[in-house]
Amino acid sequence: MGKRLVITVDGPAGAGKSTVSKIIAMKLSYIYLDTGALYRAFACKMANERISADDEKQLSDLCAGIDISLKSVDGDIRIFVGDEDVTEKIRTQEIGMLASKVSAVPIVRKALLSIQRETGGDRGVVAEGRDMGTVVFPDADFKFFLVASVAERSRRRFTELVERGESADFEEVKRDLILRDRQDSERKTAPLKPSEDSIIIDSTDMSVIDVVEDMMMIIQGPGIE
Ligand code: DC
Image (cartoon, rainbow, N blue to C red; front, side, top):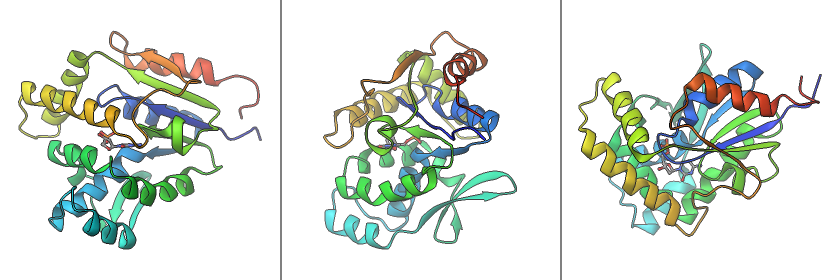
């Protein structure tokens, strides 16, 4: 059996991280770790308990008692807060924005760090997020950073929301995306940025299959099972 790799995929919202990470994890029979889902689940809990992203005391209490987990249910990865399955609930625009806002708070990042490392660990993982290659898995075997134009990313996000049956306005989706990019890139703790050793792929004019093929070609060197 060859070495089980840690592969990280970072980048801004709508760059195609989830789609390609899931496919690559499936091809390699690896764990797919969606770290954005953890921040979204945290935001979901905050929204339920009406806790503001500016209230450090309440956030700290929430961090101390938070129980977020990723479980495999019938071959599908589902996300739970306590016993509640929040997999679908976390996918709204509002939760995405709140997740982006609260993800700038260092105690929240710290609280979610151990869950990410425990899930990924040494078992063969494709970890997707904003700081996978820089902070969570700095020693990853392959680090990718996906980018795409704002127009293309907005189009993808808009289509995704519509397909999920959410009412969405294209201009609003685009505005939120630009704001989220700024929040995620300008925060002090673990900002969105490529690590020096990451491979940058611009997926603006590429199909999902092309992006996956390029990544697989880079990954499939000697030493993989
Ligand atoms: O990838 P996503 O859209 O589901 O992520 C939602 C927000 O969570 C994103 O805007 C910033 C935050 N996030 C983060 O700060 N670090 C990560 N590793 C993943 C997500």
